[in-house]
Length: 432
Image 1 (tube, rainbow, N blue to C red):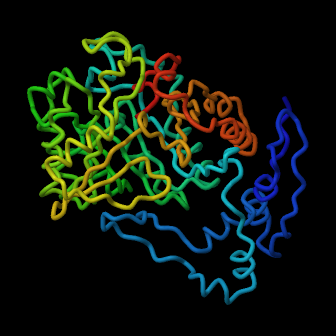
Image 2: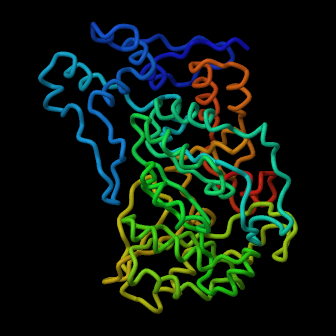
C-alpha cells in the first residue's frame, strides 16, 4: 500500500474519518505559516500546525517540571513576550489542537507513552511468570537504544508529554541511564517515569535522577519479608525497602508503591500498607488483580475471578479502621482513585481496572520491548513499529501507521470475564 502524505493536524481533527488505504486526505484549511524561518519552520508547521513551534518558542525544562524539587529551566520566552511580536501573536492565536494522529475516534488524546526496555526480570512473581521464566524474544529482535529514542522523539513531537520506562525489570538493562539521558533531551517531554521492582533502585537512583527520572513507581505486594520471598521466589525484600527510602531521601514526592491485591494472598495486609503511609510521603496504589495468562504457577495457570478483591471491598475494609478517610481530587485522565488518612504524610490509591474501568479517559499507549505498539493493555491487537523502522519507513509514514493504529482503538476493554478468555501476551512481555 502506498502511504499518502499526512494531512495537517487541524484538517485531520475536523475530518469525520481518517483517510485509510490510499484514501484522499482532507484538504488543509489552516492559515499559512508565518513568513520567515526557512524550511525547518515550514516543515514543523505542516506537521503540527504550529503547536510544535509554539512549544519550542515557550521553551521546555530539561530537568522536567515535577514535584520532586528538581531544577526547571526558565522558559526562553513568556506568553507576554510572544504577544509583543507578530510571529509570537500568530503562534498563540493559531496553535493547532492536539495531534490528530494521537487522538482516537472517541476523542481521547494520548499524551502518555509506556516503553518496555526489556522482557527480562530478576524476580519470578507468582502472578506474573513461572519459576523457570518465560521464552524471551531474541536480542536482535528487541529495540536498540537508538530505536527507542527515535520512536520516543516521534511520539513527543506529536504531543506525548510523559514517558514511563517499564519491563520486565527496566533497571537490569545496562544502558538504562544513558537511555534516560537521551530522553531528557527531547523538547516537550515533561515527565520521565520508571516502574521497577526496586531490587537495584537504591544503587541506580542517584544516577537516574541526575539523568532525568522524576517519577518512580516501586512494586511491593507484601510488608512481610518471608511472604515476599514466597511471592517473588527470590530474596530481596530489604533491597526494595532500601530503594523506597532512597527515593524519599532524594526528594521524590510521592514515591508510588504498587501493590497487586489477591484474595487469600495479601488482602490481610491492606491496613499495614495504609500505616506505611503514615510517616513517609508514599502513594500506596492497590491494584485489582487483572486477567493475564501467567502460564503454570502455584496460583493456577489462569485468572480466577474469586482471587480478585474489588476496590469497594478494599475501601470498606480500610474505612472500618479509618472512617475519617478523605477522598482526594484527581486529574481527568488518572487511573487512580486516591484517598488520604488525615495527618498521614502519604496517601493511598486504587487502580480499578476490573470493577470500574477508566477506558473513557485513557490517554496511554504502549511499546513493547520488541517494538510493537499496543493501544490497549487488554487488547491483542499490535503493530510492529520495529519492522517499519528497520525497513526504512520515513517519519511521516511512521506517524501515519501510528495514527491508523490509534484510530482503531476501541471504546473500552471487553470486561474482566471476556478478557480472561482472550489471547494476549503475559504482562511480563507487555511491560507493566
